[in-house]
Picture (cartoon, rainbow, N blue to C red):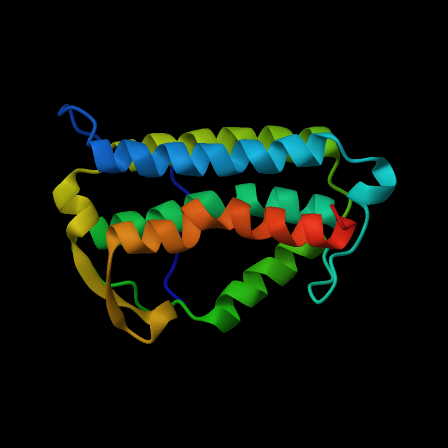
Amino acid sequence: MTSVASQDPTTRLERSAPVSARANALAERLEQGARALAALASSLTEIEWQTPIPKDGRKIGVVVHHVGNMYPIEIQLAQTLAGGQPIAGVTWDAVHEINAGHAKEFDAVTKDAALDFLQRNSAAAAAAIRTLSDADLDRAAPVSLNSDAPLTCQFFLEDHAVRHSYHHLARIQAALKR
């Protein structure tokens, strides 16, 4: 798997030009999804927070924290594409390994800690997206996670960071039958 160093995703592609309308729209959709996930999560009882999600096995609270945990990685990978470089060595097996390790480490995460983490990392992800130009969003390169298909940065953002909270929100709602 490609080494993914922890870095502040807002620093890599800083620019002084006005924010692209497309980048801003993507950032707003990410923020909207994170807010929706946070709103549901904040309404949960402790029993609901501890409920495992069917076919996933992770507790709802762990999954809420997981979304926040993945934003920096997803943004770093999108920035790789924005820079014209391929995403190499990232596999679904590696993603599952990251998720399993995260689930073990954060099995007892509190609601307050998870919600704070989600808010901070979604804000940083949105800020990083807003640094991207239309040319950055249009740049494509092979993505190992998707069979080396040449994907644009915008598609990768939509399919990963932007979609992530909506995906898990729907699975949590289904688990809770809401």
